[in-house]
Image (cartoon, rainbow, N blue to C red; front, side):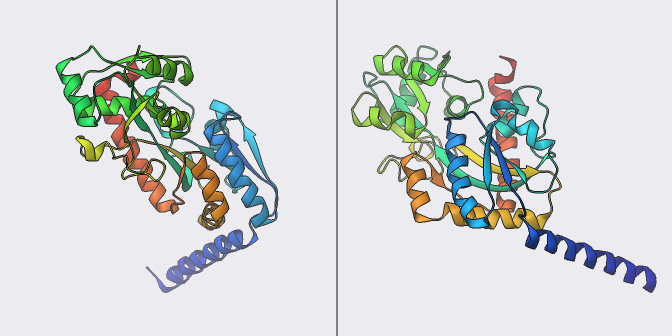
Length: 317
């Protein structure tokens, strides 16, 4: 490389670095929109809580757009300027593994942060003669195909948690589909169905009242949401982990400086004591990861669930 060409290359790199830095310093200069799932859902709750704190922190309005299932596609096509964001659950990277969609979880988005997670809870009907995951596995192996688990939406975190369990534990527990989570819960409480994986918010009161028996949580470690309850992984299924995750994304090619600024500001919001309490009360744990850690987690999740979905034949159903 000639001296002139080297100087030109270094000058260009310096100009780009300065430009990226300026983008970060000048951002945000107007309203930010966060697209999320339907109103009233967990993603909507997380989005609004974050938007409230972010509005105060950046002195710009942060507006929530409930775009339901089209939210990922909408943000994937938005300008990469940091003003249109997506806060969504596992569906972003799970749906492309199940059916044709109009976005690619890796190519179409710039990961900003894994914001919060909600480990599922493995519950059984109280009449089932098991008090631990090991006992459940033993009973399922003794009665292959005779036990059922309730599930609602195909590819939801609770559905996949059950499929992962059957594959990793080597048991045959038959899925019973329901149009809504509440209908499935009703049948587990009554004993018509024996097993279900559910979010903490949906079952805490039923567990405390004795209408459901909790066996384990599905996260990587014990959860403060259920003190004393072991993980599935520590109860006979090593390596098991399945949670509902909520990530913040920007369109692909959003400048790194803007991603860094968003990550910094949202982390401050999430780590505020009052915000932590509100998420905890809703059955969610703060993560507030770096963009790099979130990107690595996405690739790991896609590899993991691709294997499970193929082995269970879920995408063919």
